[in-house]
Length: 386
Image 1 (tube, rainbow, N blue to C red):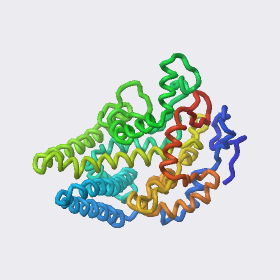
Image 2: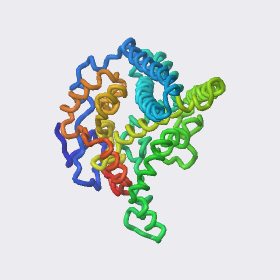
Image 3: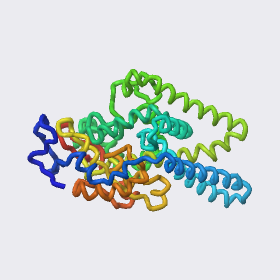
Image 4: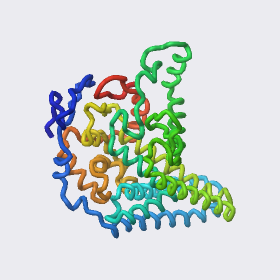
């Protein structure tokens, strides 16, 4: 794919970019060039095939849950091994269900909008996700990936927000705080908090999203992330989550609170872990920049995505959301079962603009978490710094 820094325009009124870090060359490909490189059948949605994945995942969730009913009948030492195994396995499979609901939100599950929204609403509500609310903001993320002011998740902080890290120590407290940030145990502590509570905090308070100057929540119909005509979609989303919480409370009364915690709540926390991990690593890396409004366009933003493999088993149960995420960002209505084939063609079409990172996930996570702290206040192409 041909690239050029001197004339990066993709539309005639684009201003000349300024302050481009690391001699980054802005891609000049068009979305049509990428789409034409992919076989037409990759864009076709098959409702029955999509439902087969739902049945597949729900059957495994049910089988794991049934198998777990025998764990408490085993010796205590075996329980200490079997329960964590159940939690990990159930969290992985339930994340796959979350991915299918996410696909419904993109209208990639079926040609029928009714089927998409019905299936997505049920599956996401079962995982305490406000379906329409998140569908709306996630669409905004796709429409503004890599945009400094319009992206919706893991929006980078500016240098001025991190004076201690930026080398402008103004007090001993700031210096102490900076040194603390560099401590491995403190970093691990922050990672645990983010992976346990990052997802619900994002839904409740828009944590890691754009700063709108007031409380912003996926559960608030009048929040600035929504348009007025989306009011009742948000209300319906809230009803779905409230209904699921009511169901869990009822299950606690029937089976015991401990049973709800062991069978549902802990696997739910593992789902949260996977969602934050996957989303964070898809768009946060020292080698990828963010763009200002002057140089951003959809295809450039979509290319600011990294494909990562979590291994064949997890890739399978997560429906390849991680290792084909570049394709998903270019064409979000493409069913996941065509994404692997499409990725091969996209990789060829993008050339140097295609990013796949084969760094082991723990090392990639540590690198991004410790090196991706902030970006410069000024510039059209800015990279993470620490």
